[in-house]
Length: 478
Picture 1 (cartoon, rainbow, N blue to C red):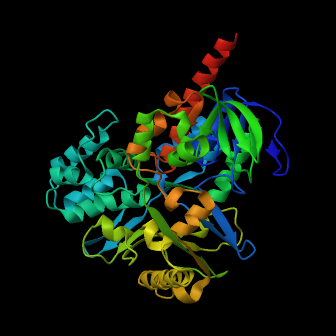
Picture 2: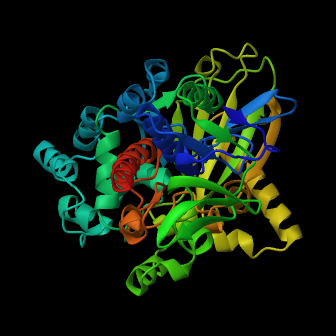
Picture 3: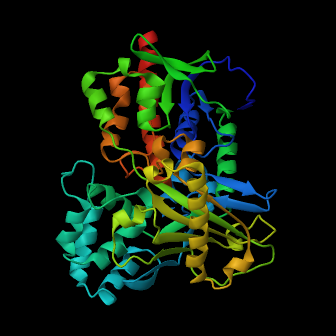
């Protein structure tokens, strides 16, 4: 049931889930289907976490927040852990474009198409390309983690910055990878995308989250929004519930879908962890943030088809530092055509520009400087878009922008991190319940868990751990 914000929770639960990102929601649904009683708590006024949307101008415009692309595997995950109707709404984006000083290429974003481009456009031998694909598809968590992304590309395509850009730039936008990160953080995500292309949810994120909420309620998950917890309650070395506005809510297990650092240091407290675990947790680095510019077109205005995702850049070479710079040279345009929202009778177009960003570049500005930088970003984004759609400025009805500060405000992510933590966060996250009984974590950690598919699957993994924990706990009490 949906619990009203003003109502006090009096029941106890098998599992209390903090945060309703895709990992938290999927874990809640999996546990509920297993017959567990579940409470899902969300600080915001809607579910979804970073998989979210917002309306503007009295709902005349709707904007999806996330870059609207994920691997084919999301279809299988939704069918298995959600329902067939949700899975059936997942459709392929068949036109991904790359426009920069090194090349101008259109792709279906499949292994077959990328192989053809690498052979025909970049003049690489087919066996060399296939060796690269076989190598990255064979990567797993148990491999040697010493190889970096830079070393991976140099191994297969030495001296070819243009190929690095072609193969890595979309993944940087998807999860914040850099050339210095472990190669596994690139390989697993890339090989997932390269199976069968890029997909999206037909109907928009708002439609998806409504369907997921309906499924959660149908499976008897209790949901309470506008609810930010004060802390996780620990008694005798074991989690027994959470504190909400000074009152306890009891549960046999707690799953945090918040940032792993916030979970450990803010929700639980250092006194409950070993020295070694704390030292490794303190060493976790947060990932980068992002900026977006949202543009809604006037009712009745149309634009020519220019592709579904358009990766654009004016920077001469591929450089992950440049991708994060305040002086923006690279943008990804997500084009939302009316047919992507068949339930919307207004038939309006929306365009979202996404760029990676550094928290410190925005956090250290004065209020006046901040507004000036936002205005500059908006104007430069329109100028960049006009190169693709020359008359777009006069067709725009609504425009706004989000920065790392916006992300922190609405998601509570430390430093506005769009992609969770760097790779070292994964081990801390996966072993949280081994360090402290009854406390589990599922969120964007280790880069490879970023994105819709990784988040949902991680929720399933941790739901299975929770189910096993509750089963053993109940055996102890017999």
